[in-house]
Each structure stands twice: as structure tokens, then as C-alpha cells.
Image 1 (cartoon, rainbow, N blue to C red):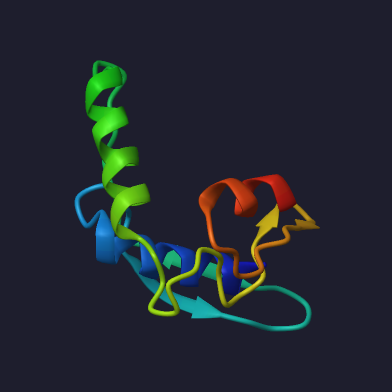
Image 2: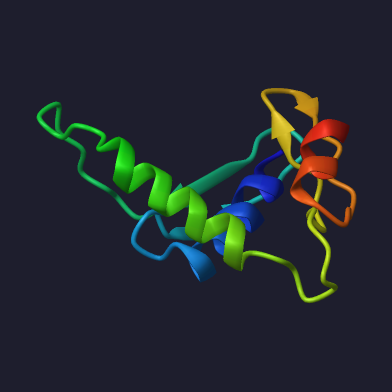
Length: 99
């Protein structure tokens, strides 16, 4: 599970460097695992600007095709303990529909 989070953050940083906490280290062990990231201070005063969020998502979706020309991911990712299907697909729509 932790490897998927680490690899996902590394990939997201390529396209959204100002929006992702930098993953620092990863330790995998059969009994416990951990992921350390750079600290990102958040305050309650910060409000999410819907237009800025939409721009970030637009940038991600327009620029994040993997070098194969398909969408998906090379490492299994998880929603909690549930593994997600993230096989390579031709479109984002197919990727999300298969999840």
C-alpha cells in the first residue's frame, strides 16, 4: 500500500510540483511500513478556491499521460485496504470506469 502512495506522489510532483507534499523516504516491512513526506503547513484560514482547484485538475488531466500514451499506473494503488484497478487505458473515462 505504501509503495503505491509513494510512487503516486512522485508521479504527481512531475505535473503539480506546487500541490504535492514531497515524498522523502519509504520503508517496507512485513510487519509495518511507513512513508515520510515533507511538512506542508495548512491553516484553517486557507479556503479552497474552486477555480484554482479546477485549474490544477485541468493541468493534471491534460499533461499526465504516461510515456506509453495511455492512462493508468505501473504500481497498484489502494483506497484504504482495497486495491484499485489502474491498468493502462486509452482514456481517463475508461480508467475511471474500470475503478
